[in-house]
Length: 87
Image (cartoon, rainbow, N blue to C red; front, side, top):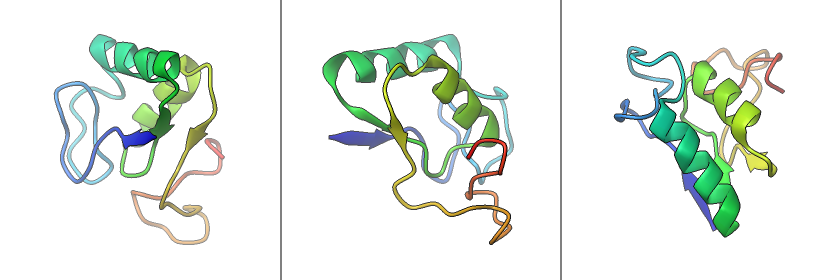
């Protein structure tokens, strides 16, 4: 099982890659979501999330994460793709 943290719009606890950032990453509750997903064995999918959310989720997660449908931003410069420093 996996869950993508955002889609096209921000949510209360995580910024989307294609919306104006409000949080700069994950809220305190967003960090709790990632920890709970780890606890129950659910993969964290970072496709669609803002760069700050990628970094926060990677710092918080104790399990591998996935980007189920993203590419390298250096290859295709789109906000939903992954910057080199995150890869």
